[in-house]
Length: 582
Image 1 (cartoon, rainbow, N blue to C red):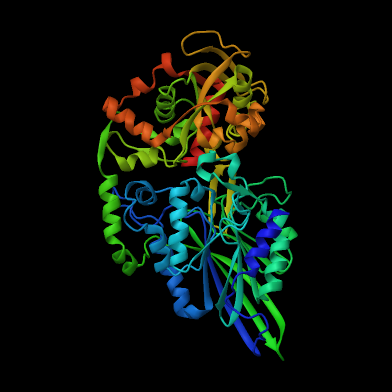
Image 2 (cartoon, rainbow, N blue to C red):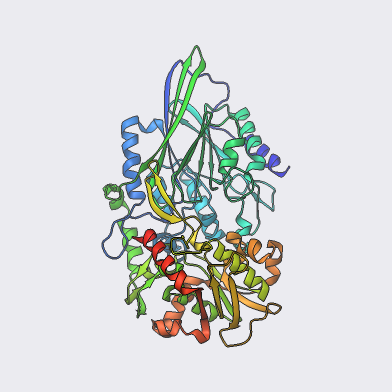
């Protein structure tokens, strides 16, 4: 298999330690700290309003406290990916100021990270960015790991598979992987020249070979892949699959799904610290050695809530000039907003926020229909002067706009699938119309109500007129009557449909599972590609000077949709929205 060749090359490279050493008798304790899905929350300021948010600054306060208590030589610090996207600062150093040394490698070097795995949103930044980051991290002595990402030109690993560290008197091997489902989300130009192995297919062989070569005392898998269900069916969420299958490791550190999670199986601990600097995961390994042999090893883990108010003042001062540069850029006025935009309003019907996304999408020829979802769970932009910072609330991701061809029947099926992620069939006002769940998990401090599914997969359509009958089962809910221009909607006809590059590459499964369009068909169906959607919104503001609810809500352009019957749907929606956002 191809990855065995790569592994052989990795294993014949120079190593940091000899393999024949024996541990001295005594007790050893290693602290393993991990983060993941930080998504650019590097600074604790929200740039406007004077609010404080959880950040690398606050995480470093806790990390330093552990190093002080246990000794820095006894601490290993790892990150499971999705570092380079999601906030103003990441955007600024990825695409605006490309001449200054990139901020992320400087930050993680300051914090003394040991290794970082590659996340899908790191790949989303494109070769120019992540290749630069790879080089900068290597120069800083930090491993940027994704051994399952294969260089098509050479057949070798594009990123290193593993690195070995000396901590707490122990030899620690960290084996790293990136998410295997990249081709389903991102357009090829972002990952051109790279192929992606399924982690589960290779992980045991990798572990066995690394252990045979390096003889580590502690072995850690660092992977940017969600926890999943452990049934081996979801390529983007393989961590529980790996936990259940792999032998000979102590930790599986993972990310991607943004949900804090600890799982213990036999002597292995899985740690997922969630996202956006909310938690630091902390694992502890205790080893006892007698007469040159390990007589006991115990592994335990916990999640540490990050206190936004306790930020590292010295770190803040060290990067103040970088913060000021980002702030100056993001406070640049870009136009006027004539109504509040609330992303939460998109869950109960048409709203100014989602109307804006649809309007700018339909303005990109040859788009006739737009499919879009809210990409901020609960963001608000107040009416008034807009600054560039507001565009990150309106559109936080670096998605391009694609236009693909779909038949009317495929669009209908797509919407049936989308709304099934979003709503239940209801029969009375006591029913939950939204697919929500109540959380009360003391381990992660998650309380209250949340969606079961991901709200960024709750696509609605524009350019057509339709209803969603909440009393009908999936497959019978969507009734599309006409286009926004008044033409009869034809299930046989092909339409040009605007959507994000994430969706047009198969992200969320709506095209495959809903419309029934295979990933292999998507390239030939793509008829137009546009820049990032945030930039399209910026161009709209430059052209129009403002966002006017009447202009973006013009039903002759975007059409109309609603939940029916309103007498049942509206009370149920109001009840569930109160639970979610009280």
